[in-house]
Length: 164
Image (tube, rainbow, N blue to C red; front, top):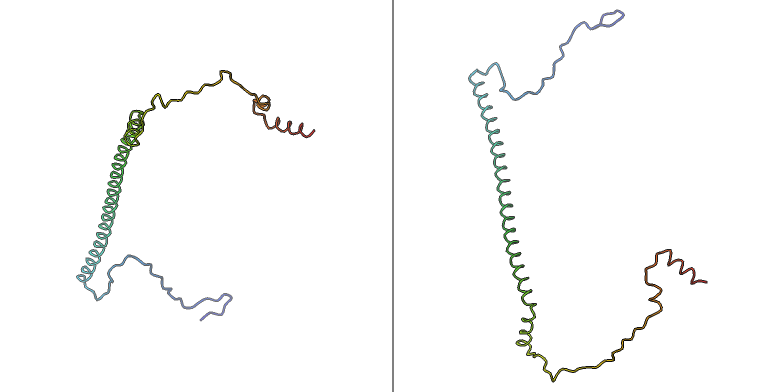
């Protein structure tokens, strides 16, 4: 109800209920609960929180251990590959030494004689050819004029002169 004046005013005032903010779960306090039950409920919540924290801590520790195991396995794999590389390099050097030994002329001659049945030439198999003692040299005309590489402009000028 309002009064009849120039500015209306409420006659009765209402209490506006305030919204409750959410807080950490605490045991519900009811006037009927005894202090003993409230303490039991608080200890249960504390135990529950402790177990959750303990499980999270153990999970973190297990994750750390798992990552260390993976790192150790990777390290062992790298070490094995490095040993394999060292053995392959050793084998490679041995093969290169064998190749150099097989390129020796004495080894080639013995392999040709033993494996292929080849023999050295005798005097009867040697044929001598007699040649004239004069040397003949013929000079081409294009090689005397183009002794140097010409630049782009020089080539362009030559083509221009060839047109006329």
